[in-house]
Amino acid sequence: MAPDASHQPSPSLPRADAASKPRRGVSVLGRIGFRAFIIVLLMLAALGALAVNGLKVLAHQNTIIEELGVRDRVAIDAENAFSTPVADFSSAFSAVMAGALPPTVTAPRMLRNAQEISQGFQALDALLGSRLDPVMIGGARDMAARLIPLGEKVRDAFARRERGAYTELQEEWLDVQVAFNRVISSVRDLVRADQKASLDRARDQAEAGQRTTLIAGGVGLVGVLLTWLVLVQLTARPLTRVARAMQDLSRGDAETDVPETRRADQVGEMARAVGVFKSNLQATHAMAAQALDGARRTARAGAARGGRRTQPDHGGNRRGEPHHRHRPGPGRGGKAAGGGQRGKSARPDRDS
Image 1 (cartoon, rainbow, N blue to C red):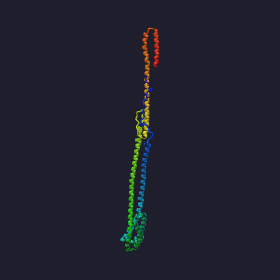
Image 2: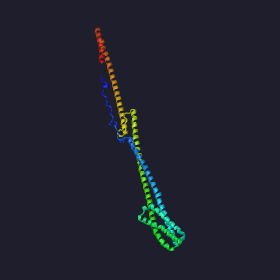
Image 3: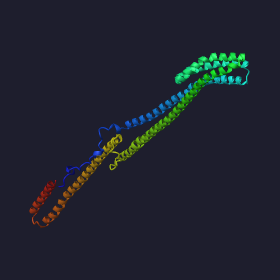
Image 4: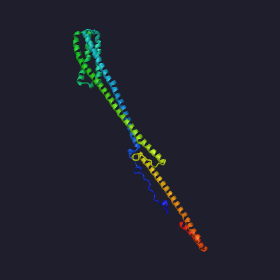
């Protein structure tokens, strides 16, 4: 008698590969959100660097413009307000000495020029005196104190046409003029130095701004490349491959390979979860195949038992025919017939 298929040992079900088992956690660096956060920080750093650089450039530009347009301009105006009357006083004195100008007409102008020189020196001393050489500015102050009395003497001498006093007054004026010319020269050098320093700072600031802009642009470019790498290469394309594997599994293809199962990030975690579905599908297919094989075995065993039931009846009929032909008496034949009937009724019991 054939063994029943239900008692056969079941084939081993496919196990999920160790790499396809979902892990309980993903490292911080493997999380897509953390990577996106790092990229956002890089982009914010680039934008912040550009913003700070722009503000610094504007602040330094305003400072340089103020220095060039206000401080240096004020110093230049103060120097002009001082040097112009000095030149006028000197030229007028020389013209009178040469006889080119009448002394009586020039006399009031000389005192007026002396007063303008004194006012210009006071303004220049208040503005830049602390930055000039102390010895030089001290001598110029002494000469400025002598200037108004000198102007009065020159005016009176010109008004009275005292040509004998012109030479002595001119020598005194030359002493004053030398001290004032030194101050004027020093002020001009100081203004030029300030302008050069302002221009140098402007150039340095322009170069620093260019460097900061290039660095911020490089950081922004790195952020864009990281965005493309994280969102496209490391996330979108792997998820597309995992989605295709899920579609194949949903159509019942248990032999589909699940990609990205060895990755340590969230994409790998999702791929390993899909691997579990694949293992379950393979187990379901194995169980269905086992059930179908058991049904086939049961059908073959039933067909074999049905063939054994019909074979003994045909043999009894062939053996019973000679008994009917050769038995002489009806009594024995009846007994034999009865015995044959009992034998027929007994064999099905044994077969059953």
